[in-house]
Structure formats: structure tokens, C-alpha cells
Length: 112
Length: 109
Image 1 (cartoon, rainbow over the protein chains, first blue to last red):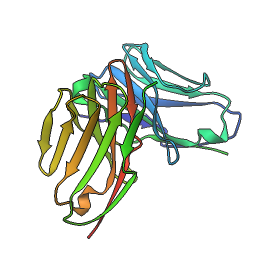
Image 2: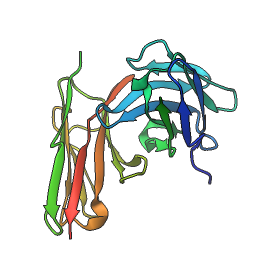
Image 3: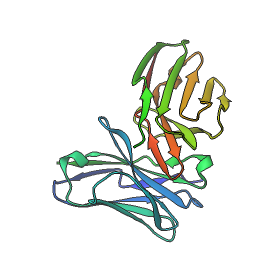
């Protein structure tokens, strides 16, 4: 079966712009979560959605937002980009927590 | 708030040596998951532990959950070059969870 698909794979944006990242979970998975990974801060949780509802949220500013659609696809938006937002953004989906989360390959965002 | 720690940050071993990484929490956990991320790749789920004192094995990997459910370890016996990567724990506290900072394992052939 197809894995978690994230688009685009790479993105370069200018400071102050906004960006939208997309994630298509594995078919049948209703939980989708987003993470930011940087060399300095490691893997940090952004938010989790389940059946279109945000179930959990990490400690990120309001510039980071997300949503989930009825087909479980999810989008993450970052507004007013800062240089420090440069990172690998990973999406993961799960059918049940005990099965663990399957990660996508990520979107590498560079803010210049 | 909850404090989590994963140690060591880095580990360099000779192929054939053993390796262990530890995750510790200041509060009792409901579960812990372990992931492996190869260089340039994304995290891949290895296992979940939920019971106090639980021990699970996957070939050369042994996972343990502490009796107090505040710590966990991942032990690799006789490392191989294919074990290279960063190992993360994901500590769950019911509806909250936290990732450890990861242990980067390098195996010299």
C-alpha cells in the first residue's frame, strides 16, 4: 500500500512569506500529526488531527496552523516565515496508536 | 512540566560491540514508542511498550520499560553497520507525548 505522501519535497521561501505543506496519510489512517525537525532542536511535535479535529498541539506560535479534511488529508500552514523556520517538516499517520506512526519523507523548507 | 531526557546523545562503536540508549521521564508514562531514523531518511516505527517491566525483543534489539514506567531502554547486541542511524523514543503521557532528543549511533566496520 502507498505510504505517507508529503508535497512538495523541497521549498525555498523568503522571510515574511507564508507556506502551505500537504500530507496524504496511508489509506484508512485517520490520525495525522506534524513535526518539525532541526539539527539543533531535534524532533518537535507541532499538532495532531483526528477525524478533522485538532486533538493535540505542541508549543509552537500561532503562525503555525493546520487542518485536516474529510478524506484525512492534512495541510500545515506557516505564516510570516522567519529564518528559524527552516527545517524538515515531517507528517505521520496512524490507524491506532499501538501500531505506531508511519512517517512521510518530509518537506525540507528553507527560508532565506 | 514533564521533563524528558534521552542519553547518550552520540555513540560510536566498533562493529560487533553492544549499544544501549536510555529514555527517562520525570512523570509516569502511559506508553513509550521507539523509532529509528537512518541518515537522510525519516523515522521508522520499531515498537511500542505499555506494561510496567515489559521486555520485547526484535532479533538483536531488546526493548525494556521500567517498573515505574518512567524510563525505557533500547539495547542492540553485536551491532552491525546497518544499525547506523538515530534512535528516538516517543514518551506518551495519555493525551500528551514527547520525543527524546535522539541517540545518534555510528558503527565502525
